[in-house]
Image (cartoon, rainbow, N blue to C red; front, side):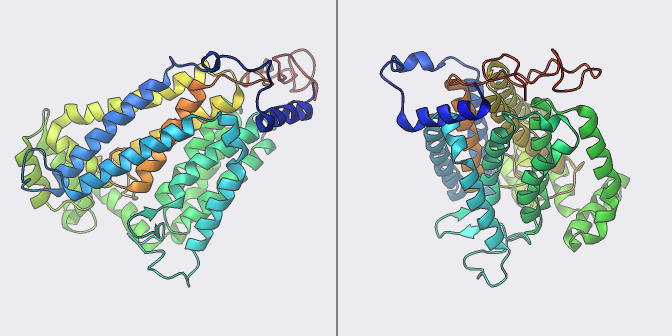
Length: 437
C-alpha cells in the first residue's frame, strides 16, 4: 500500500465512519486502564495546590476557615472549565484533531499578528507587564500564545509522522520554520519567555522522531555562539533582567531594593519556609507585608514554600514529575507515530515551563514572566494546561487506527548504512514492513 493510498483510506473512514463490519463494542477500541490517569491525578493535585496558594497570597485575614479570595474562586472556575475542555478533547480520536490542526494554528497565528498592529485599541489588546499578549473579552482574557502550544504540537506531530527527512541536517529546516512562525510573533509582543518554550518542545519531538543528536547539537552550539549578538536587540527591561541576574549571582545586595527586588523578596520568603513551612496566618502575613510582586502568578512557588517549606516545594516538583512521567509512559506504550509525538511534545512544554518558573523563584533564571502550569493564576494558562491533559488522555485512551507504521523505529542507526539503501536503510512502512521510497 502506498503512503498516499493509506492516508486517503484513513481520511475516507474518518468521514464515512466505521462500516457495519467494523462496528462492535466501542470499549474494545479503548484502553481505559492506562498511564494517562497519573497525569490527570497530578493535574488535579497541582490545581488544588494552586487555588490554596493563591488564597494565601491574596487574603491577609480570611473571614472564615472555608472562605476563599475572589481570585482563588476565579481560579476554581478556570479549573472546572479546563476539566470540561479536557473531557471534550479526550473523546474524538486524536487523528481527527490533527486534521484541523493546520487551520487552528493558522487562526492563532493571525490572532498573534493582530496583536502587533499598533492601531488596535488597548481596550481590546491591553498592555500588561510591557507586552501585548492578551485579548480583553470582558469577563475573561484570551492569550493566543498559550493555545498555540497545543496546535504547534499537533502540527509538528502530523508533519513528522510519515517522514524521514528530519534525520538529515537539511531536513530539519521545515520543522524549524514551523516553530519559527509562533516564536517570532510571540517574541515581538515582546514575550521572550513564552517564545523560548517552543525550542525544547520541538527538540523533544525531533529526538522522539529519530532526529540525529549530532545535528541537533550543532544547532544548539551555533545558537549559543550567536546568543551574545542578540543582546543589543533586546528591550531595555529584558537587558535589566539579565544584568539583575548577574548581580544576584555575584551577591550584590545593593540591587535588592531595585532591579532585583522581586527576586530577592521571593528568595527571602522561600528561606522563611525552612523545612516544613509556617502556619497559614504567618505565611499570609509574610507574603503580604513583604509585598511580593506577582505573588499569585509568576511567584506563586515562593508562596507555596513559605507555607509548606522545602518539603512542600519538593511535593509540587514531585507532582510535576508524575505528570511528565505519565505522559512519557503513554508515549512509550503508543506504537503510532503521531500519538507518540503528541505525548512527548506536551510534557516538554510543561517541563520547560516548570524549570524556568521555579528557577525564577530561586534566583537562578532571569524573571521572564513564565507562569507555573496549573498553579499560577490565569484563565488561558489553566485552560491550555488542562487541554494538554485531554490530549494525553486521548492518545492513551484510543487505540491506533490502521494504516500506521511503527513509531520511528529505524534499523539504520548504523552510520555505515545510508538511509534508504539495503535491508537496514529503508524506513518502516504503515504495516511495520520496510518500504522503498
